[in-house]
Image (cartoon, rainbow, N blue to C red; front, side, top):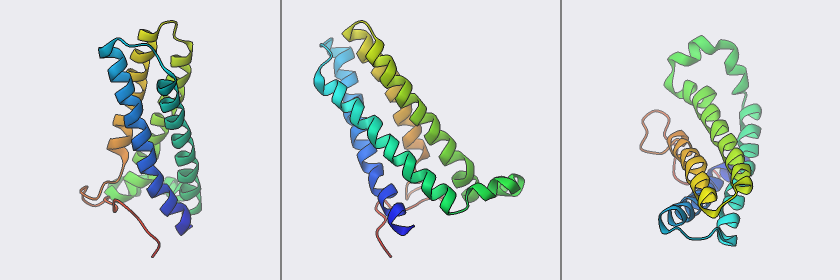
Length: 153
């Protein structure tokens, strides 16, 4: 399971890089009024794929490490910030972000104009990136903080 945890930790950076690339493309498209390009399409495709792989790794960790069993004693787990974060908050916000990425990608593909595509990219992927950033257990977050890079120990 250690390898899955290391991969989940490292893939976070790919998700963030592709997400920021997508967000920068959306911002430059909305404010620069430029056409929707192959780079725009590629960035949100790679963002979606990295989110898909990240979700798969996260679900493997969630079920393999018995986090799901903690839902049986939800009342006591809600009192402990660490358990609450990893049992409920992290997973639920990341799933909402994942859903937004998929809805956003489909919405962008269906938009009629380049301006609408960029605007939808900005809205859906922008909210998803915010949720992702808030849901990551950054090292500076007390109690729930994890290292920037987790290696094999």
